[in-house]
Length: 182
Image (cartoon, rainbow, N blue to C red; front, side):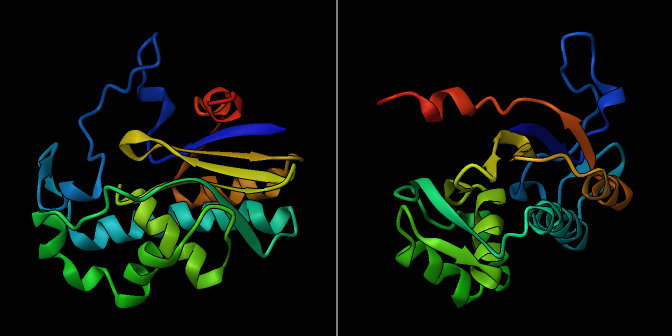
């Protein structure tokens, strides 16, 4: 399987140890905060969030997938923080209902998949998305995302890069811990 790190972070701005050197926002809770003289607006956050979801869809299209399954689900800590409550209109009932109903092994398609990804990117829940040996999606801390696919698609990679995100060959740091017995 080919594993990629898909992020908004330019790899040219990493030091020799791989640490990112630019002061950038790293989460939904950063909306309204200032980074390098610019305030992170709700619109800019949502634009970036949509790019991440489109990146997942690009790889799903290559793998001819219309759904992904949820595993390693963590939702027991779910609650809207004070910051999230301020942006309550960004949490429609359809999104909240996913938190209440989703279970390990569920198959997610279209709107459910999109809402699940939004909740993961906003650090509200966590889980692994996968389709047998064809594809996986891991959401990391600080707005990192890892996607694995069974075959390389330069077209999907180029499409994601043209959107403004960065795609690097990179093994997901979650692979080993998710595959080891508990």
